[in-house]
Amino acid sequence: MLLGKQGAGKGTQASRLADHRGVPHFSTGDLFRAEAKEGTAHGLEAESYMNRGELVPDPVVVGVVEEQFRRGTFDGGFVLDGFPRTEFQAVELDRVLDGQPVDLVATLDVPTEIALARLAGRRVCENCGTVYHVDHPPKHDWTCDECGGNVIQREDDTEAAIERRLELYEREMLPIVQHYRRQRRLVVVDGVGTGDEVASRLAAAIEARVGPDVET
Ligand code: AP5
Image 1 (spheres, rainbow, N blue to C red):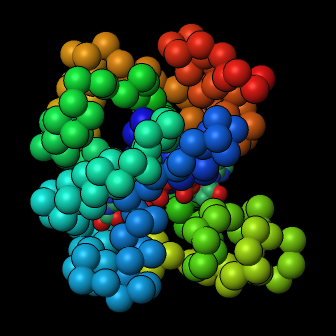
Image 2: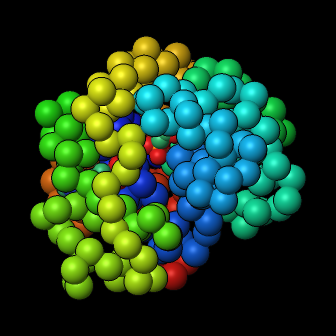
């Protein structure tokens, strides 16, 4: 599970890690954006909160996560990104996992000024969600390298919504961090540096806890 403030690089690292380990990358933010695009009831409800930088209500979030576990999406392992976001969600996740707690909870630690600079330059594929930055754009004219979709700025990457998300992060994260500290599952990983540097630190933290990836 990856925690960290907005712009810490959770989505970027979760996607790399999931590819490397051959398990699903589950991002509640990506799921809500996809559902909003399809116009589902959950998606449209979530979108109204997301665009303001507010948290989607707990019952909606827990409902969609529980549904994924029920379908067996995560039976072979998973990387969670953006969930849990409240203490209630963390407690509900323990219930859903039914006595089989997550192996590791890694917090990507990044100073707010760096996170803000990353968010200001972030661009995402509106089709598959691949994340880019104005300093690391796709190869061809803002067309996604992975799927050919349009690469755009996220609707909640406005100054007001970012400010609100960071404010909520400070408020909601402390009890979550304490929750996983009590379970002795939390490690803090320095999130400053290149994507490769952060990925190596994360891999080392995972290896120390759950052992090496069989493919490496
Ligand atoms: P979500 O989609 O989860 O967004 P977020 O938490 O605001 O996090 P971000 O996506 O902004 O940051 P990130 O850490 O993933 O950074 P990234 O890798 O993209 O949630 C959006 C909304 O959905 C929430 O506000 C809420 O409304 C709702 N929601 C979602 N889950 C919820 C839940 N559980 N409960 C309630 N509501 C929920 O990187 C950012 C930029 O930096 C990119 O451009 C990237 O290329 C660049 N970058 C990354 N790493 C590096 C590096 N090492 N060096 C330089 N640049 C880098």
